[in-house]
Length: 231
Image (cartoon, rainbow, N blue to C red; front, side, top):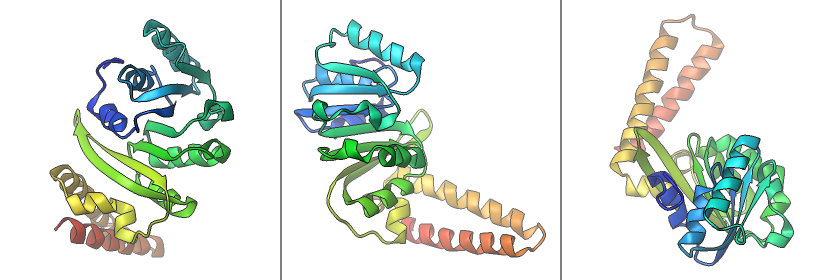
């Protein structure tokens, strides 16, 4: 992977960035995504934010190597602290983290979202946390994609400002992903159900405490929820 050829995962993220957007890529690592977006004429300008010094230095070198120092600013900062009002950021990308961590980044510096109209978020796990955050903060799902790369399953969530209603199953699984019901989606959740059933078996063989009974019942509910969606 490099600034000209992204991974399938990051290429999917890039595909949802509006043409002409001013992008902040948070947790940018080597800044491959912002470099790609500017090279392709998708992003007008970009900010690459990194909280760790090593990846920040890598991003600075990459932007310089690509000859994009006039269009991409690299900042060493904690999450959305990398975004300044003068940047005029209209879209934010956050990829390659867990859903709860992405939510904590969005919540820590909410003022950075003031002029943002689109969020493209790629959680490695627990996408549910992002859907819950969106419901509470006036963001609506415009699109969702699930994909498999190198044996790992990823989801990409595209949010625009607006309201939406999600039931419990939709919050867990993703309303658009439930409608599409792709092979990757079915495989992922079939595996999850099998894991939950193994946990239930272990609970059945353990001491029957109130805590264990509550866990067993919770898993029974989740299994029924998921099986109903993937059937």
